[in-house]
Every structure is written in C-alpha cells, then in structure tokens.
Image 1 (tube, rainbow, N blue to C red):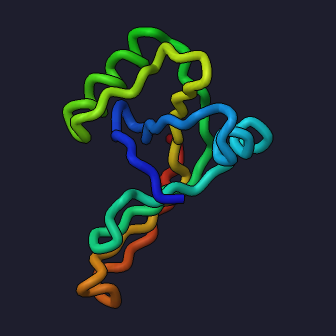
Image 2: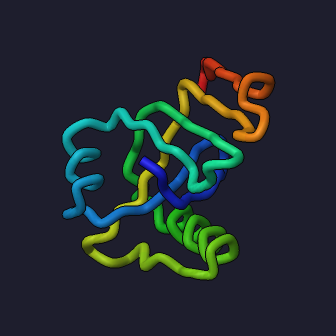
Length: 110
C-alpha cells in the first residue's frame, strides 16, 4: 500500500485510522508491505509493524511528519494509530532505469 511516512531510528513510521481497512488489517496481522508515495524513485519495505504508544516517540514522529508534509497528524486522537515497520526486506529502483537500478536487500538483525 502506498503510504506517507518517515524514516526514524531504523524504522518506517506511518499513521492510519484504527477503523480503516488498513488499520483493521494491521490489527489482525502485523506483517505488512509498504510502498512510498513516489512511483519514479521506488522503495518497497516488507516487515512487521508495531503500534507506537511512547508519547515522546509519537511527538518526534508528528514533528518530522509535519516538517516533511506540512500536515501534523493528531497522534493523541483516540482513532489514530501510529505504526513502526521494522523492515526485513527492501526493494528499490529508479523507474527511468529499472533494469540497472533494481535492487533487493535482506535486512537481518533489524
């Protein structure tokens, strides 16, 4: 699923409404794939998500998210969930030069 998010402390963080299809799916199965919003410079991460509950980390996430997207998520809203994805596999490529730039990484120990 393409998703807005930020990279912080070795994890990819994003938010969603707990009642959304994405939120309900993650509540039932924490294994996920995310695709960043660019279709030209592609990054796809696969791994396991963890719900973020630490107030300091939630505020760091909101600060960085706002700086990147000029929108501040309400991390204190009851329906809002913030997840951190710890990648196990990553894929990346540049669309304009796919055959030469396509790369797959196995991220052990993350």
